Length: 366
Image (cartoon, rainbow, N blue to C red; front, side, top):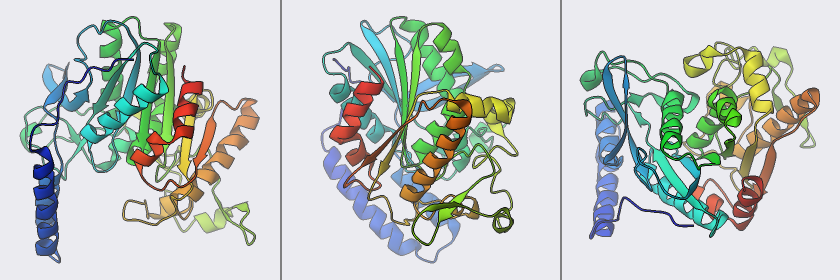
């Protein structure tokens, strides 16, 4: 398999990154106890924005999203058989995730046709990127929320992060009719994005009619989209037990979207709960958990809506597996695959390079 690179690591990049790390440490010290504005500066300096753009027009407005791709998306890529879209985590590091995607493609499908690898970047308002027409969101881009409209982007249309992915996929397929598989992969915040996208998008069914398969990889997310109001906690012997409804009353909105199917918003608001439920239960999703992903780090969703899903990412994943399997029994179908990786914590590089992960991707998404 050949993967064409557009972006090269420039000379001196390593030294540049070392300076960034030193600067980040200095800023952390200076900003201790400071106002929020200092934190904004900190994030602006740390988030790298790729130079390429996925561009499109909505209601006469020229809009775009930063992007890293192995090949220009608006051109034909001779011999392309697959599109691999990799969604970054909360650090918004699209370039790093693109590199990981290239490695996945090279190792999962060696010598078996070509793969276009694309990694969009969903900028957040904390970054404060000021380029005219470049879309940005709050942290709810993870669930398909609408973009914001402020500052340089005043009065622009609101666009769901999931609509952006729809447009990316459609752009590639329009120019590459030989593509047979679209695989969307995400880790951490990206895993949240992919899990909810798998449940809510309508592109899956349209591509299926054209003979194009879609698949999804959800790795180590901090929270999940539940299909009912049931939640679980560990019993005295470590067994999963349903949380009594009365205990859940202490967490209003625990079943609101993006955690459940109440109060749907953004992209998901276009569908009924029954439609979303049926779509997720009928689509091939590979859920991947690191057996060492048990820390309660700063990126873990510690809101009560997240806490009622479990105490850490591993436990939350196992409870969600039980939840989905109970619904699969009702639907008489279980199309999901669950993979637990030993000696892997909350680390996308370790997860995506693990031999068991590569083997499972190859077997599921030939």
